[in-house]
Image 1 (tube, rainbow, N blue to C red):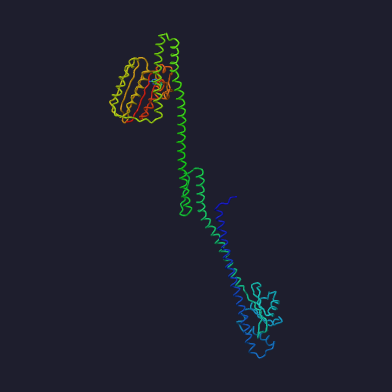
Image 2 (tube, helix red, strand yellow; image 1 turned 90 degrees about the horizontal axis):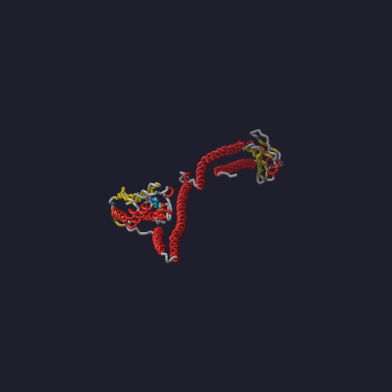
Length: 485
Ligand code: ADP
């Protein structure tokens, strides 16, 4: 069974109080008893000495020195002096026979050892005994060094006993009272003390459970108060450390996720590169083999060389894109920003692409604000050309392309919109991934390997911009880029 600290402290205080009270009572009562004994002894001896002196005086004034005379004197001495009668006394001869005596209380001699004690006195020794609050005292009375009689005194110690018993009773009552008061005060004091200790115990349990908001501060100016402050400090530190650990764990898990994603992307990228490169190489190899076999067939040679040249161009474009993309991925390229006139650059790009637009029976509308800003011109050209190129490739016959560029508060918004085939909703967030094509056969026909938009996104992000696409199938698509100024 577990005994609580509250009970232990109260029990300890009670036993301490009890020990002190007992010790003090025994000490005081023993002191009183020994004082009373000494006082009684002194009174008895004084009485005996006075009797002896009076007896000697009477004997020396009498000329008759016979034993009988001494006995008569002894018998008479006891009545002659009133101061000798304070204490009931009797005189015996040396044979132990009673000569005379007087009693003030009329009590019977209750001393059973009387005879042996008289005999003891006859032998010259003093003795006394206490029987029922009366001290029986026996002493030889000497005259000229001879024992001539035996004096018996009956000294009542009733008052002494009464006094002693009263003191004892008082000690008992005050002792019990002090003990009860001590226990009550102890309970009150230890209750507040243990209440604070229990509070701290709960605080420790709350720290163990991680309930840091349930820690209570104890308002004390002693060691317990300091301990409580220490506990709060400790709990705050633990809480802070746990928070920091959680943040670190989250950051680590984000980093691990990112690494895993990057690893997956890299593997996909490599497998896509291998796949995309194989197609033109296979075509080139096939035409090369055919030309070797039918080296006299001029039509085949013409068609073959034209196809080989086309596939080589496609391969070169692909190699360029892949290299650009992986370079952008790997190295933190410096951005070469210059102050440029956006309208001038966009107009220039539009006029250069006009031939291709017309060739595809498309029309171009431009709504470009005159904006001077600082940007990486090369990057910007690459982005816009790619987007216009896609707007041409994925447009419908007689469709149109709309280019706009405006300034809105602290942003420049550039859009390239077409009236083309549009993009399915589920493909919208994938078109920026490398090698992704919505309709791979159509894309391949138009010469794309699915790297253009991936490159555009990287270039936009390098300039701390964002790119978004909104599209509706068979109605057209709108690519919007935002750069903050
Ligand atoms: P690609 O070289 O194949 O054109 P992109 O990265 O430029 O590669 O585009 C990825 C895919 O997104 C394309 O294959 C095409 O299916 C789709 N796409 C891009 N631009 C448009 C557009 N303006 N309209 C419709 N589809 C588009």
